[in-house]
Length: 377
Image (tube, rainbow, N blue to C red; front, side):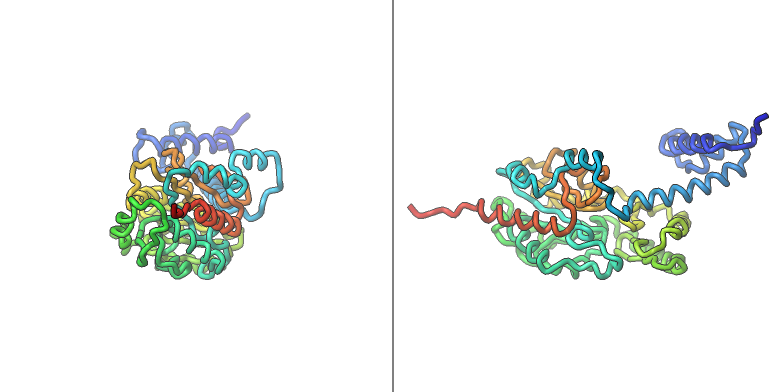
């Protein structure tokens, strides 16, 4: 005889899947996954206690799986899958000539993430310094091309890391954008665009200013709530918050994630996303690195233009929004910085910041060699 009060793993999985579909649809607008599951469970005559108990277990498991997936701790061994992935996302160094050929007759604009792209990922985010070699190469890039740093970090903090006044800086995932405080060189190419660059060198855009008091409030709460988790670090990036768990024992990941989630339950205007061993808390406005890329292109005078070739280089999930914009426009290229195969909308790859530096240096050398100096007749 079967016990009809027993809720099987398959039933719970089915409930979660159906409830998730409902919560993402217009059937029950505003309904959460747990609420939808409770309704479905009662409809099927399932005991609510069992559902809640299994749901909590599934929730913890989901947290851990999600945090692991977004934060690979070791490189995968070379496999057929990895080789196939490389064929679809070739090295930007090995295909450099193809990339520069595609940019022929267009203005290259360079967009760069910071952590994991210009600097290595380190245990202490306050010590994510880039090398002198990278800074020198980046200075050369800015001399020849409009260049922007697009990062989840606080804009002022990244500026203190980079220390180059001729760049555009888009901090807090693009919610805090400021133009260069130092005039850019006319060597950047398209002379028709120089006036536009000068007019916008002080551009300042902050679409989430009204959220600042809330962000500060949640920051203080999270500092208090997470101090019991060894290794956890909460970073205030002005318009967003980062909860780093790189130094947290994996056994405590689920507990940390649950603490953060419970705090955010009281702040529906904030949303939670995940990056590389970091939980990101941002306002629920429709703004991301992709929107920041579009805003900056418009600031450079290239809105809806076919005369521009954007190159966006980044390593994190949040950079995918920018990759998607470029792919949807069929414009420029996205380059993912990663040693492991992962789903991405980028077209090319580089393995680490040292390869990023090599690629940028080659771009500078290519620009210098392709600049034709008129000779006297």
